[in-house]
Length: 151
Image 1: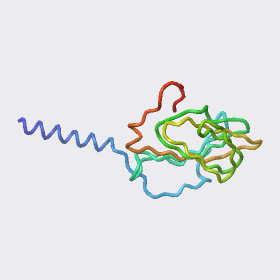
Image 2: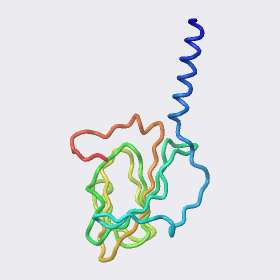
Image 3: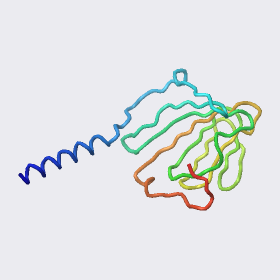
Image 4: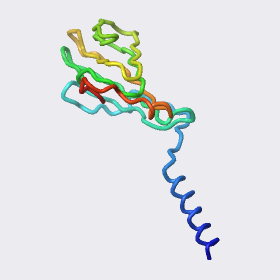
């Protein structure tokens, strides 16, 4: 009886564990013209994917369009790393405590737990790709307390 109960418990544990594992995203193509733009208070957002991969717990790509003079949100920090790639327009990015202006083709890397932000500094809409990823290490890195700005 004990052996049967132990086997049943082990089987249930394996089934529960398998149900919580995420399926890794396979190679895929994401067409700009088929990614629906969701209108926001600051402009628009297109979510291309947000999924586990073979080497990350989560990889995400979305594209943000920000109206002139606007920002998608206030400067903040989080444990995962993030990369902005400017598609069009002029943005200011908060990097190392300074706001710096860049244009199309520019990239901004946001390190784990460092205060960062991005806003439209031009007179036309600014569009940028946002790529972020979570790895097993992300879970161990907590943002410092004190500034009240986390995401």
